[in-house]
Amino acid sequence: MKQLRLDLDYGERVKLSDEICNKVLKLSILKKADIIACYIAKPEEVQTEKLILKLLDMGKKVVIPKVNPGNKGIEFYYLKSFHSELEKGYHGIMEPKTLLKKLGVKSHIDFAIVPSLALDITGTRIGFGGGYFDRFFSPAPERTTICGIAFDFQILDTLPSDPHDINVDLIVTEKRTINCSLKHKSIN
Image (cartoon, rainbow, N blue to C red):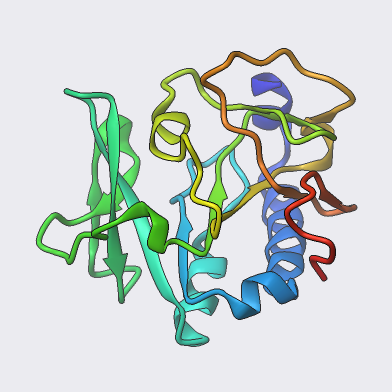
């Protein structure tokens, strides 16, 4: 899966990322959300910069993760300006500067967009092996909708999972939106 993402042409990655992010922005559940958590993408992932900028333009409160490698945890910080409030962090990934306001309680997050290496149609998510998002969102607050965004080739019929893995409530790709949870009768 890693190689398939790396093999995706840059122009195609940007095009597909835009399609995915535009579909996310049209979700009624996202429109109702006040606080939205989103990751900053690595070059081979679904690109999230335009999505974050649009969320900020919509007046949403956006929180971005910062990794604490010492305790293998993440903390979320409020972001108001994409370009001036980020710095290179863990593994060279852009992270919020620590002078920003920290999210107090994870249960305040209404909608969380999480990175994924692979997903299956039931919501099983394979991340990148660090378990950062699994630990933070386990257990997931009832009010939080967890959304995995991915290129459609990253969606498989079934994946193995461990007890500590979090599932996503919905998946958005350039081709489809999959409701994986009974939590939401309607997501559009």
